[in-house]
Image (cartoon, rainbow over the protein chains, first blue to last red):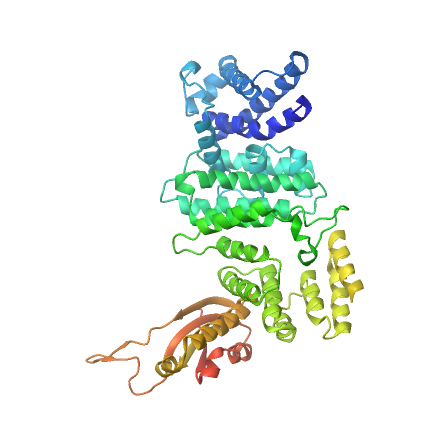
Length: 408
Length: 113
């Protein structure tokens, strides 16, 4: 790897480690100091390496510099020592006693604990995702803004408010107690699920960024699997779901960046290794008797990794959607269920069911009706696609609907 | 939206004696499809539970094996459903697979006070 590639790569992987460890050391109320020191470390790296060349072990170099900067910060900042140090966890004016620990174990522990702190129910879910992207995934503010299709100011404000909230609520960077872990884990999993979806379904045109979002969600999810206390069935189920979805990355966009619908995808482009990993973790998730929505969604995603339309496939998908909707209603699940129903019981039955849904502001609803009326009543199919086209907001969606109309 | 209790009544003893495993499986599938359909309309509050055949009826001085010895039909399960009105709730209940087994659905609006 050349220096030009190496620094962004190291930034992605090491920024979050350094920030997590420092933040754990200083306490969450000084999260910005931790971020600043980590950013500053990378700035030094860019400056130093460009004229001295790469050090032998760049990561170790970064850790040493980060440690020194943190130490200097504590030493030279009298205000800090007098006013803030008495409040912080590792209070001592003799900083040498509290060596900042950048060992692998402490890095993993700190990142996991940060994950729980940032996904704390006191801050809104959008802010949880934003903060996780910034602190745990090393994303820049402009990248986060791009992923959320908004501007830097909005993101800056959102993150600022969230940090304030973590400060005023005195959220601790620690592992939740075993009695609390299930409740807190639910929020963490929701955040990871949304983080993944943000990447997978985002309208952002930056493909690399979108894949990175998904991979980061998977990396953080994997941290939970590696820890004995959080290696729970629903954690494995969510990971399986992500593997199955991610397996279709290469197949779901054509060379012009347009979405390729599932039925038109070239299954040779599906990543077999990820499908196998998904199957492995889905299997791992089957311990215990709790069935979470992640289990059901992973099950649905599993059946989608088999391209051929078999009776067994759609019967199972219908069953899983029936169950999923009973746990948690969502319009998209209701629409997908009705599609599965048409595959099992025929289009006529599905049309009757679809008309009960009355999701009249949803363009997917009319696309589904268009699809179901195909060949039964092509005029009605066209009418529905037309309504869908009018309701669709993005260019990608309009393109997809247009194609369907042309095929009629 | 109002909330309704659906009580499913049928002669469960007879039904289970006559059914083959395949028929039971198919019946279960019809129930799941029907409940799934209600859930897809965002109208299922709680799919509820099936009830065991056994039961006891407790009166002040007398406990009998129940649910109701004198009539064959008994409550086999219940669900909670959202609907606009009785008419609307009845429309949903008409699709219940219990009708093909000779049973009935008792629809009762719940007092939410």
